[in-house]
Image (cartoon, rainbow, N blue to C red; front, top):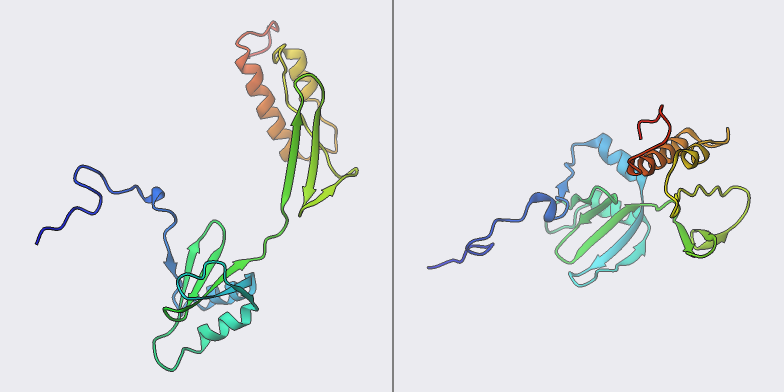
Length: 193
């Protein structure tokens, strides 16, 4: 019997990173890993059937109860890591019942930048969907503008207040230096830009 090649005749199989993250099963004898996951995975949804993609929110103890106590007919439920980047796990009890477990999402920060080419740039910050204002928000704008990133601009942008955290300073310095290097010529003799 003729069977066609699964990826077509003259095509290569997809690269591993194109297939998406690999699904990893967590063995039952990894007790330390399981104990840590029981503490970290605090958001759970119950999915009934293959078509139930949204699920119903349930306490994570319900999912772990099914994991610890298998159904009378059938094998032990599997605990699988679906996506290591998002921290999504699955307890598959049977073909019809599965639970998705996740770490609780901490904060969502949305920043809306209103870049007016003829005026100022406006920035609005939302934390968990709530518009936030106050002295705790610090905006660092790195924009050489049409005149370019000359050395005076570089000195101005990289002059930091003492309260600016070191990681933020480093990020600003790298970005500003990159703009300055693109200038390809600096009038200062001591500059390597």
